[in-house]
Length: 276
Image 1 (cartoon, rainbow, N blue to C red):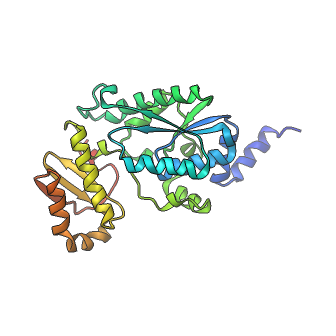
Image 2: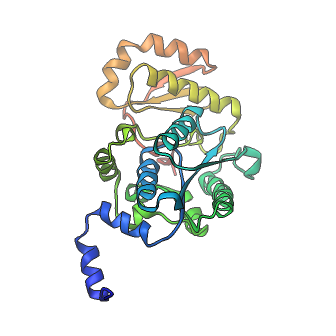
């Protein structure tokens, strides 16, 4: 006998969010998960694969503004869990206006990226595409979410009301190494709006952040303001930076920056949006 609408509602109401996510995915058919290798998309992909099996694939974008280490992490994850992975390549020249870095850059980028992801998904038999934004993403300036909605992309984590802390907690329950992985956003987000994005400058930012991560800083952003590098780290690691300031300064300056500074407010997401 089928559940009555009232029973289905009550059943959903009393599920925890991880159960809601599995139910959401189960009822949606085959899926392609836009997979970056980060905390959110890793949890979504693992849950989708556990729920849908071979009806779930990962689609990973390769681009200059995504570090190779992140792409390799995504590849290693899929190999580890036996998930089919499809790669697509996106170049700056594919996205009109991207290099000029307007305030709606993320919208322009995601509009093109998700068109390509959808094409790859349908070519591989997936009925829909899902991505890993969560409810915390709703509190910042996120023009990319508009593109996601326009493209008809599903956002299961937001649909079940899951935030970043919950995603980390559920990831620990699944034994995912990514549960403790620092948050990451594409390297283009390190540029002041209106400042030209080039492959060379993306590499400068990437190398600076990689150096700081290798030094043991757990959450890092190197924001680019002309020839100045503004470092954001967790406030509790300021003392560590002061102890290593000469080493950090000399290396980051050697990459081509004229000035190197430490942001006294510390790491936070979307700091380039504070002037909008």
